[in-house]
Length: 417
Length: 210
Image (cartoon, rainbow over the protein chains, first blue to last red):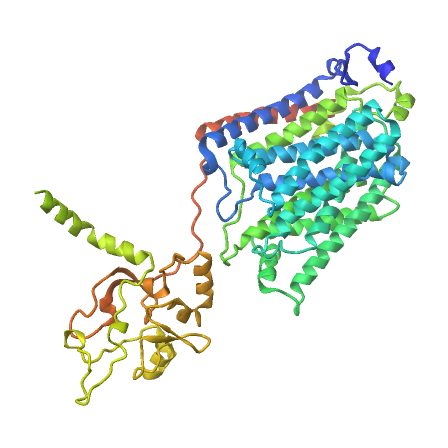
């Protein structure tokens, strides 16, 4: 593949990877319109960050009673989304799931970019990011942050190294297999420590639950697989990659399975909290806020969207339809964001002294920075779709004559957003 | 002139200094142990002279009257007055001197407040700080803002030991300060939103044209 690609104009080899810059020149106006849109949003985000650096915390809606806001919610959300990719990629090697083999590069790229977005969010959340050095110089080993922060950094590096190994083919299948043996446990470790950030809070009764860890893992896997499915459709539509319908069907089956496990764990938690003879008053009081209180508008859709997504995918006769698969995936990706948001709000709605806090709504600066970071991730994926050789060689040789339909790019990339 | 200025300043700031003293939660004085236990001689008069010709004092309870009527209310916290009312009853049945850690007496009922004070979210947890340093122990909803010398007048009126203000708990959580959004950022965002909407329109319309 490499030899074939390098013969084309506009292809440059950087550290053994053939970057196809020529594809950017042939890209249509709508592709560039989409890139300009993303750049505009990134520009707004940069200006918002500048405001934050000059004005400090006063521009944020995060307050004493609500110290973790949209960015930390996004951290958990993006870290979770990145898991799905890794699970699919790992299943290729560990369980010999050949049908997912064409997805491997895309899955690893998606995982790496999402963790990068998560970490960028933490940098803005620090307000004075240069102080991050103190976390390294004076680590507090009792704090789960030290574990989740280091895990996310290492995980990001593992993902990008893994992508490089997959693209260049260095070390062959053996090295790729070994990398899986490192990356998959690390993904589990990362998501476990992220859940620990919440569940090890003794004073926040709603988070202080051991089931938080498995719920994080299943939510992460389900939303990640859903996003990968959407991403794969987009890549197929813009002609960057080609997949068999059976691959999407397998992915949907996997998605439906993980969704129902995720919903089951959530149901178990709700039942434990509200069971008359086992309910802890503080725990029940806080969770009740999400059924009848001000946060119900964020939490009830989680159940509706989650059950809806499962119902859509449960029917065998309709599961193969792309519209059904994409709708269900979108529903679950949105559901998990709302779940993360309400989970964060749950902890802060009633503070440890029993006082109610005003509901948190992110400020303009917070929203702009969050959108800017999302646009950074989308921009990387949009450019990668053209520049990076994401096709797996076996697929590529069969599909090499396919014409790249660049003009379809923007609308599809929009669907991801 | 300098001395006069210093005296004027001292008088001016003295109430503030007293308030500061009270704000540390430290007992400003311990009058009880100076007389109690009161032992009477053969003539039925106290062996030790009571200050300012005092014979007995009355404490009026306004909140702690729920503890009972008459002596019952006193005995809820104090030892028998004929023995030593300066000794206060703890939860385990032992006594603590009124100059000691009297907060543990209050802890018997107000254990939640005691816990909040211990962890530092109620008042100040400082070495000499006690509940009675800030609250009038007989009517704890009164808090001291400045200590006055004891035994003003002929009897010991508990209210006379300090100025007091009625204590009102917060009606709700404190209102968070408003979020600052610079006007220029709002304007730039509006412009950016218009540009983005234009681009989105182009992308969506282009889809139908295809």
